Image (cartoon, rainbow, N blue to C red; front, side, top):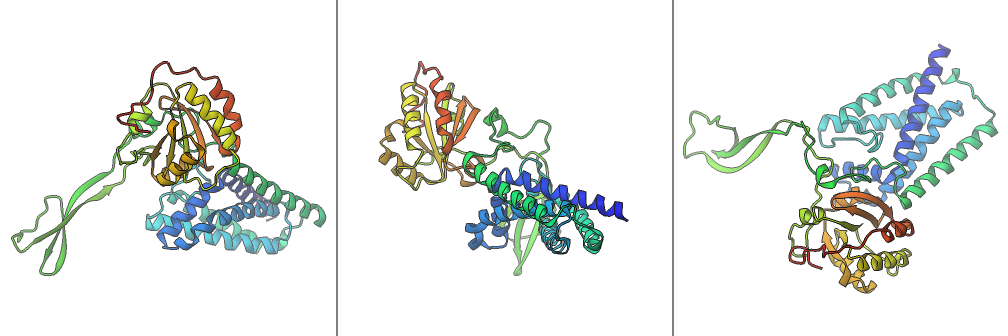
Length: 388
């Protein structure tokens, strides 16, 4: 029995610490996943608090895992872990059974699990935690109370500090589809050998006040003018796996012209600055940005602001005195959230390939890389399709 308890403790403790550390690498990712659940449940008023929830949950996962390994205050932490795993199992079960959330973010973007895999994992953890809950009296602390508290305080401080660091400087391990080395046009295509969704056309008719769905060409024998057409839609028969890694990345000009391919396929170097919006001027990073802007303009390297709030960024660039040297393009807010975990985030690309990226706090580190770039010998921006 003692051996089983020890094995269960190690599995549960290590899994919670590992899960917390993976998510701590990208707390915004968990925050966005929470917003996805809240959107399904119409809890939009909680969206402003999801980052706080994310940080607290990650810290608790790590600290609880450490406490289980130390065997400290098992009555308290066995209760807390039991409540937490019941909550997690509800979330993953809801996602799996409802089909409204495809991934639960249990291990972040680094180890993507389907809703079914996450649900199975949580069911196994639920069994292990229940076992520990009823065997808690058999678990004795490994260290003294002072030593255990010191380790738990250290785990709390380090987990908070690490999350603070990555929120400012970007994830230390980039598991997102926009990582350095990625060719964006290729990642916007379906993977080779993938299977597209299988759908069938479904026609909706109204007959005698009743709505009737007619799938494909399976018209009823009594089909006549009494059937009044209402609408049509594509009914999913079989879900494929042809979803590209980069989704919803479309670059639009102020007037709505799609310039995605024109920008990504243009030869030479280019700079993207992803931002949801720019509220502050002058911002702390303006000095470094001004140097980058000057270098890019001298080398004829195009610089694009990519945003979901065109007017806001246009006003910011006017105040910064750089509106004549940048192009502002609109993009879906979800795509920007994925591409830029810090606001703003600077990308250096060559044609459609991401070479490097930096958060606003690290623009000084971008200066040497941009300074070493060769100047463009020909005009890179097509002014007819990508206006300033």
